[in-house]
Image (cartoon, rainbow, N blue to C red; front, top):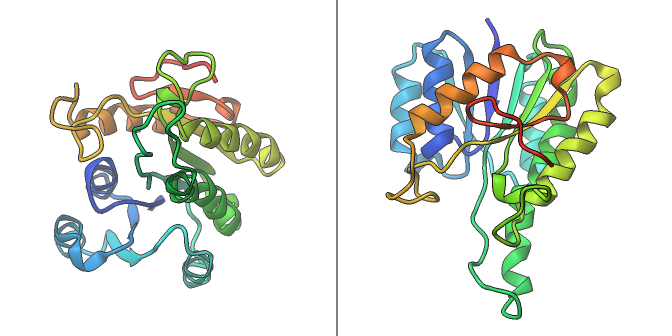
Length: 225
């Protein structure tokens, strides 16, 4: 049975990923900061027949991440899916609140790097050997038409990890999930979480180590870094 660990699995894209993988018979480790408030995820795990397990994890807490890695020490993880993310302050040039940006980088950039470091041995022992980071087209430097985004730093982490982990046979990629109808994307967004996740799952299922260091749209198209 393949295994996936998902951060930010309590809502939106993360919850849909958990639902999709569990429905396909994967062992799902679904992580979120406040399980008591994650009603949908709790219901999914309770009704999964053991396919999905809920874990309390604040991705900005290094000790908690290390503790979870020890708890799962004997378990190979085929896909480490770094989905947790938050939106940065919506201010323009000249109005930057640097203190408000610090927690954004802690979640969007440092946390995926921390998870990769803590779980690299789990991933290396698996069959699929995949690390997937949920980014955004707004983080593309080559395709930047809208100004700054904290996801640009995550993209560099992804590209660097693809080089650092190539010797272990690990494939590291980033995805733009599309403009999705979630709390972050808003009700006016273009696609539903199920459509986004279905597209990304299709790409994930086809990934090989030759794809490492790639940035994909949810429909499989390549996006420039």
